[in-house]
Image (cartoon, rainbow, N blue to C red; front, top):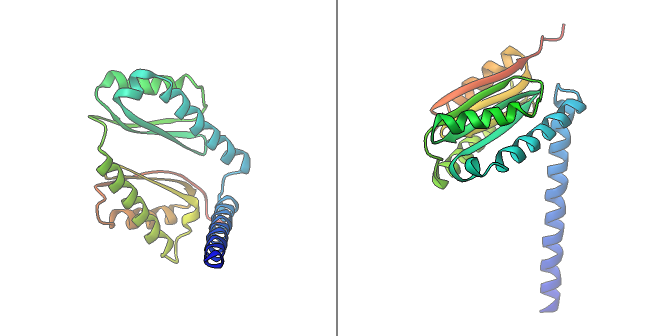
Length: 191
């Protein structure tokens, strides 16, 4: 019995190590393939933490709205729901107060926060879109950030127009997607 327990724990530990190694390898590939300099990637990550902090620090927004922010190449995408324009505008003003330097794309919808079921469905849509992108040999999906909010798929990245068109077509033709919003920064093809 002890042998089986020890064997089971060993397999469990090694499985976790393999998963961590795989996640590290994929994460490393994304960092290496990203057109943004590493400092910009770090700035974008820091910006997302700052946005989360400022929005969750406001009790009115925290209790009544569902708003989050993403950063790509110094620009910010605000998504989610606010029950009224006052709270939507308040969220935008709080993020503007961070003086981040890039553009703020306000995609906050007026309405009640979406349900857990809708958020779960959004995660499933994102997974399907990413999976289909990964399977397309003409697309380098490591340069694209995909996020879904209430059936709307937002595509962000620093890529060529050709790659953007392929990614958009894949997202548009994925079941459950109501709308695709492109927020790409374009790079010129290498000669």
